[in-house]
Length: 476
Image (tube, rainbow, N blue to C red):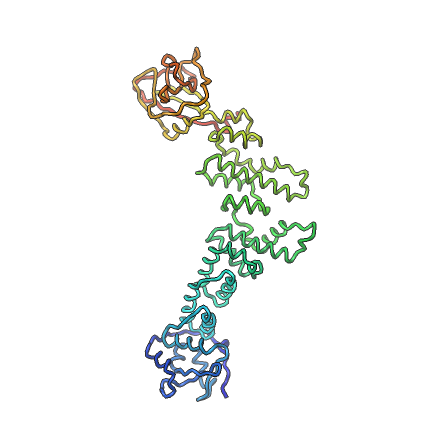
């Protein structure tokens, strides 16, 4: 009577891969008259002939299995854990170095490779598994399989698949019932594929577990706080993610909504990291974040009626205000966002629209300021330092600085006692001129004044500069 052997009792041993087509052709023949065959395997009522020496040289487990201690001469070795077809593919690999893997048989063949400790066969199967087309509905099972058999290459492929399909995976009903090991795997995606989706996926799973385990119908139950507590205890690496690395949209739509509030330092960091963004745009971003955060804090507060929205908003924005270049903003924007919250008074907002202009000729300096609605200051700032030489002692025309004429009439008039003016000539060229050179067609921008007597020295280098109001200047 045939003895029954359990391959799961195997030891892990080394494997040498024979690659000989001639041997495989002999295996295919299954000719019992061929002296090559000296061992018979019985599987599901069928038999497979093979060669002991070839098998035992491939696997020491086979060497132990086929030893006289475990088998009787001329008695077939019975295999119960695997099908005939799969065992044949296993033998095919031992003979040939390759076999016919499919999406259906690769899992059992991997188990064979593990239990019979044929390392090269296991790698062969893993290579196939790592290139499979995965299904989001079965992705957890695939992950479990990769962990059970320590398939690192397959795990790396799964990581990429999960990262690229996390939105879809999160929407499946199965995901919310996933085991914690799989959610731990998802949480690790934050370092390689971005933190936001990993955070959202782990949060939604945690939220589901809290709802399932706690009395969410209790009127005193605070779901947001319960989820935050669970997340902090179960997934500390997710809970402590750097919020400043997340996108503005995710912070506004998800993080703040779920009660993950930003500190004033974090809001400041977010403002600073968008240094290439238009000043109005990035101010509006942090403004909206702080405003929504204040509203959510009020909603979550146990004493919401007495919660001070304005104080909360100002506190969160306080470290941003000193960094904001209000001078780069339009007056209408300042009046809509800066003035109502008390960051600026209306008078201060008006002052931020002014540009300071200086002319240096040799060691002599003269300055003036004006309300700049046409971008003169920005243009000069881009060309800074702007230097020029002219032979006149009465006028300098900056021929490469042309601007559109302002739509509103000039509020600067030629006045006794003012020697120098900044103007736009009839041809829209920016000019610095002595009062004797002012024409009725000139659009006077600013009166220019100096603490000492100023004059133009012909052929001396003249440098012009433009600067803008900063908050400290306005508040003084």
